[in-house]
Image 1: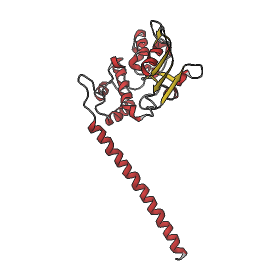
Image 2: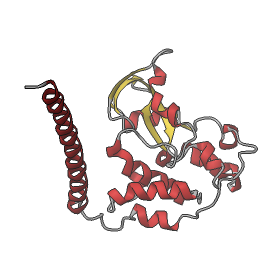
Image 3: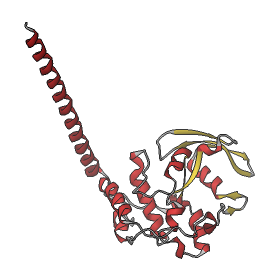
Image 4: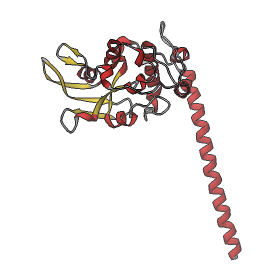
Length: 241
């Protein structure tokens, strides 16, 4: 075979490979769309007397973000509320982890436990200590800074303290993921664990409904895009949080 023929064969081979890869990507994308539709169609109907997250989202006011002037955690009390000898952090750790070990039968301080982290999907073996306690942090699902700029400034101090310590608003999560989120809303940060995003957004909406907070247009649109994947997603039941 001539040198020209060899070059032509190699060029054709590259074209075929490129076409095959493009076809494979297109087929995978179509499968993903089909699979998503199957999940939507197979989703169970919402429980009776529940509120669809999308319905609640549609009723939230849409406004611009207010200035952050005057914000500090002290505006929300700045510390965990106490229930007897237990603060809210210990109660949320005990609620959200399994295999929990307490300091003693009379001391609710959590020494260790296993967290199935909703934000990353990984299992975290929590051990209390100066270098390990931050591996699991308590996240305010609606970031406190975000709440301040979307209506919390108008709440009384008592109500803001209630918001800061509300179990509906709190989740034990992966520390680095929580730090990455910072004061972000749904338009700027979503859990890397995509399977949790519907419940995450529904929980944010539930908090904003309860405390009469608003959403920005970008936040609303981001939430709606997530809920389009799970149209039967309902707001969490507070007694189960």
